[in-house]
Length: 126
Image (cartoon, rainbow, N blue to C red; front, side):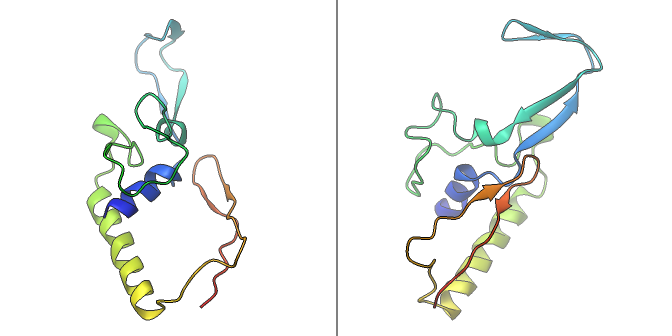
């Protein structure tokens, strides 16, 4: 499960979460007026150097666990448990069926997307 959680932190599948301010609020010295749109950049929060040691490195033995990949507070995804286990099961079955599965030598995936993030291509060799 740690590798799934680290993958969700390292490349957050949701890049931003947009909300609307319901009251005037001050954040880090800036005033956000009631009614203005606010975007929480989850992808950036998952790489916060103030929270994660070596945030740009994939480390499935990482001890920090709260990543923000499923949101925060009252906007925390209710399906987080299901989604994490669905990913884990899919990976277990895939590795069991294709134990030699790997990326082509030298291939580095490129991830795109502001709201939803995904690789542009993911070729495999087995």
